[in-house]
Image (cartoon, rainbow, N blue to C red):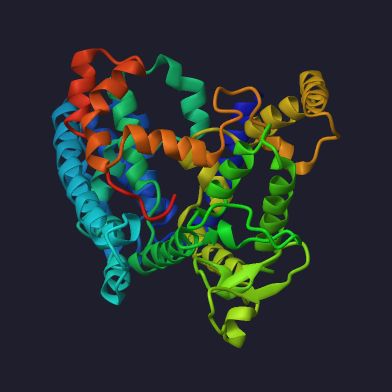
Length: 443
């Protein structure tokens, strides 16, 4: 048996075991319904009928009705193959409208958190928690739109797509992708908890800005120009990369690395984050008041494991989805099988091959030779092979600021930028008319 088929069989077995614990439709009822539908629509439809009935039964809850209601729904809702095209087109168009407008609403509710529109007010934080889309799946099942789709169209596993997908036409792929919407039936309170946990984590990261001009390395001299604020970790990473080949760059890189380690260990003073009240030496942990401020004891203390409290909250929220995801019963499985659409084993294989390749060892030696020193952990981000190497963050900011002194000037130059990236003039103009450039609050 091939690896794909063996994996698929294992997932079906796991799904059967989980569903057996939640099933409200017994096997006798399912067989009776299958028999009735086959008698009505013919043996040529049996495979579709059997799969559709199984899919609906697996997601039929007690609140949906008893076995008689299940049987009646299947009898009234099954479509022969010849009628699937128009029905699918209608469902696709309707969901496009619903999900598109919900996305528009969600974008509006989170705008003050995503974009730098001014100070974030308490009402902004509360509105961002309002997720109207968290009830959509529940509503689709409650109205039995989801059950109708499950009865008539297959929910494909990743194994099926890998095995059969190359032979599918565009219509088959469209139907398969749309049915991903109904693969999970997650109660609205569970989905809302996930939304809130992820939102809290996003807010934490978006506001985790480091005042680089207040970092010290023991000499007492500032390492960066006044006012430079960098988000962790993207901004810190890019700043570290910019110091390759610069005078004094190695020491600055070591300071940034030590700061990153302290962030991971939660050993950064609370008053130093996104503030201008403290001077901080990440090597010694020494803290001093800055700009004449008198910091409080709380500001001088380290974070109370905030990073990992939010991480744990995400874990618990996502684990709450597990009982409602029989074919991908963990967040990691859902990430690989449902979201990224690539088997975990394949990702592990690729990473192992890359990291164990002789080319990597030779590349490491080349980098060490270029740097004239043994490699350090942060050299994972060595930037000497790119055109931006040797340009500091300040130089890059200066060049961008000179060319685009305001958001409006960048917006106006989008067609030209897109053409330089290889887009045809008409395509560049089409895209530029539909792109709005806004200043982001985070990364």
